Image (cartoon, rainbow, N blue to C red; front, side, top):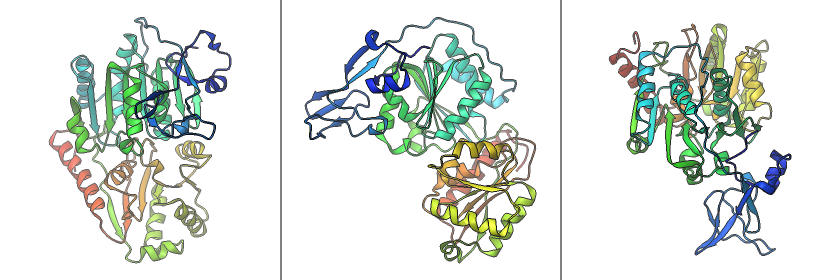
Length: 434
């Protein structure tokens, strides 16, 4: 197994690769003293924090294990890779709009450094990447596909494994390590802190998602992991204005592959909603709507908090005892299993927090956002959540329902953005009708 690229502490090598002899590894001080403190050579942060024992440690990247002024990072230098043939077995076909972007990506790698694929949810951003991934691997390039979200990484890993079955693809995040090699890595952004000037191509999916969007540490992680002459591609359905202006090339795709319009959210009002939710209950009109949706298809129900999640699940179980349901949230130990069970049709109703707003695809589901006026549901989140409906398959009756007691600015902007994408897609001939 090739394990070049990663710069790890001694104890990390013992845990991850106990069979490796570090006598042949190169090492550097994990922290070096600089003018205004101690520089962490893993994350680039500067710390002045001192332990009672008299040595310093980095506070920025503690989640990966403590780096201190007495420790070292060990690594094996990467060698240049040979050109080779790569087998892409994906049986699908890109639409003309997707293919146009895929060709531009291939043609512009030498002329530009940063790219943004701004494409609506379910537009097939991952599939657009396949030709470039194949070409890059054939040229001996090292690739990282990264995202702030574990669920997104898991989904991408499965898609890449299916499309490139002969490639040794690794998956790294806080809950799992599937170590297959050092050429093609799928990981959460935090894991990139273990690499330095290593990847020729880094693809950042869901670039606007928490916590990446507002965390300088994670931006540094991507910068440091990429070679100085490397390329970077950002993927998002809801990029901010700054990113659109910052990149060298921007590609916009306002429609999904199946040529159906994006489902526009419907508003379902309940003026006393918050009073019901405090009691862990739902108004009658909302309960009836959920019941009608469940008669047609499965339902993803988004709640603004974990505490409300459990209460609403208990209430719905009492009202619909025959419905197979479960809950999922970020710290749920069975989270990955539950998502797979939902895909397999073992649940009719999955009640979730915003943890599933991105990166997951279920067939034949409608989407309900409970208390859509809550501050946790900003414009971006609402657009992403609405995008869970009608992503694939032949089912065309999925609905998106925003349950609220008021119309917030975020709700207005989300609906406007979805409608504008539909209008643009119709104008460009990418959907059949509004």
